[in-house]
Length: 454
Figure (spheres, rainbow, N blue to C red):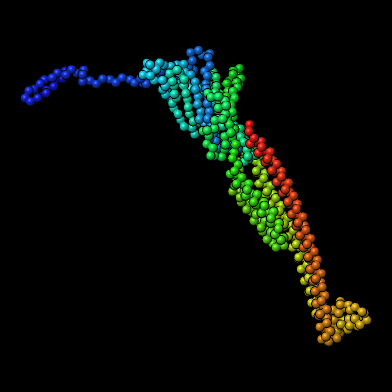
């Protein structure tokens, strides 16, 4: 006992207080704490929670697709974000709520209780999934395990119809070791048409998630499996705007470049610029086309054929310009040769020969009704200025006639080259028309195949 002095003026009081009344009472454990300790006191998390070990545990599965994060055509991998739910009954986690202040549901650590070993068969890599360390347990023993999962799964991707492709990726759930039975938590139709949580502002559109159940027999043992088919479709607008439309513009400009005159020298320069621009755009957009080791996408064939057509168009123009250049060169050489022979050939002749030729020409002109112009070009022995003037005039006339004949020949050759250019242009248009019709037919078939409703 403690002796306490209290002085109340003017009287002094002595009060004795028992020691037991001074020690604080030890707090009682809460009902939640007592329930948790009671449930986990003799619990073995390594044993399937059933009273009869021959009875399989039924695992209910539910799946909600949140988004498609990545589709890798080269490695055939698809990264998907899902909201996954497991529900099963644990016969050892049962209590009476009236004995624990009406508690009907608690959260327990997933490491402290038995959790089914349900895996995804197509799982190929570890995703960045958040860790959810707790599960919910109600008084009847129903355990609910809700968690988001980032699944990196193998998928057979069909990229031939890119960007109008539709993919079917499967997620197969089964137990790895334990004797469990799998079932769907919600009806099949509701799961298949549940797209409300899917992020529809990305590249992919979720069509449906059909599912079915079957049993796989391995080593004289049946394994229950549930397969979800994730049907997704690519939105092609981005690729049409960034890939197809610029390529079509290049091809249209290349066709119109045939209307440039081939002898102007600008056609080849213009076509070379088109080919260079198409190559630059193709290299810059290389990352936009998915790489696949199985089959080349049809759009890759489209780019290759477009480049081949551009090269063919440039080769046709080079051929026509070469023909024109060859004819002009030949005519020029012929004209220069004629001029030089006429000029320097007459200077080498002597004055006596020139005079003699001129006299002979005049005598011949008197005897004939029509004068021979070629004979007038010969020099005579007479050095009369009038005969020299006549000789120069006749030589000039002959030269002009020869130039006129050569000009007519050159005009005919140019006209012939233009006809060849027109013929090559028609052949080019025919090849392009066949290519475009074939491409449209293939894309229409593939578009119908990958966009028709299931």
